[in-house]
Image (tube, rainbow over all chains, first blue to last red):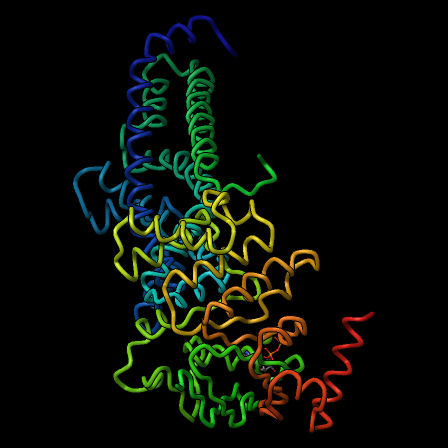
Length: 224
Length: 247
Ligand SMILES: Nc1ncnc2c1ncn2[C@@H]1O[C@H](COP(=O)(O)OP(=O)(O)OP(=O)(O)O)[C@@H](O)[C@H]1O
Ligand SMILES: [Mg+2]
């Protein structure tokens, strides 16, 4: 099972794996960013929009959430071929899928802000847009943090699905290592190593996001 | 001089007619109190004045401007009508002073430093200058409501609407809010107050309007309405109210 020679092999290739981890982190960030930039407005449209736009957005969300991410990615790369770059394709696939989930996080958060907040803002003469922008959204963003944190973890781990389109991220590189001839005995060591890297990344970012939440939390008196 | 004229206002929700032709007038500087049983349409009436709710028919005039006129900008209109809510509705993510400066900056375009200065004056007016940088959740209900009053006052409205401003408060906190309202009344502010605070009504109100099932059953100065109500419904309501406050 675990063998010193195989560990030595993994450590000799640690640079190669860490470079893959770098791509994993990069892909997580670009996907989440695309997901946020698309998902936040989509959530707002689902709450405040009406008519055709609202229907298009909510239907798009249902379709994206109902399709396996590996199918989305394969279709984007091999069928639609949106880009020759696996990284860009993976960003679009993961980003849109994340947008579909983030839109639900923001929709719930926007709806959870008490109606009275909007009324108070309108009663001092703010327009509907100003009330949303300055009163509802800042509160909704704070309430989105737990859901967003969850989404971050999911996207980070799902970057491994870019394996299916050959992007040289962490999982793909791990696979490259033990499929070299004569190295199949290192499979367990490789998977333990990349799992540990995923774990460290997840743990560290969650801690970081916890800090961010605390920093922006609205003081409530009790936790002083 | 008439500041507010409400004329034959009707409002329905679905099949239920909540306001069935309400009319009354207020002069500048008047303090009027709306009373009536739960569901009689008091909140709806207030909200129809700043158009948080839209009327079905009738007319509302504020200082000569038709509130429901085709050329009336509802956001401009609302700057002239301050509103104080039963649940305070302070902006939860902003400090007391920021609750006040937000409207000054975004609606009136007051520069930041001046907005803060003006906000502080209004916080002083309600006795809360020391709490300027506290968040709503760090304040007592009474303090929150006073900030709510300051927030409305800062827009320098012509009319202030109060919807049961003390009914969400613990009894021991009612006094501080009523005191602020009395000061306002004494200072000449025109105020329309939904409240069952007999003490405030007696001492500050010019007229009481008793609303029941969407109609003003009777109106008059407190001494008349409280001591010699003409209608059975008013009498029954007042008896119930006294029983409640004396229990
Ligand atoms: N947005 C709404 N949609 C449907 N019905 C409503 C709405 N707002 C109020 N109503 C109904 O209109 C009637 C009058 O309500 P309103 O809130 O004006 O009464 P109120 O006199 O303020 O009562 P309370 O003393 O309980 O605050 C009630 O029957 C209420 O259920
Ligand atoms: Mg009410």
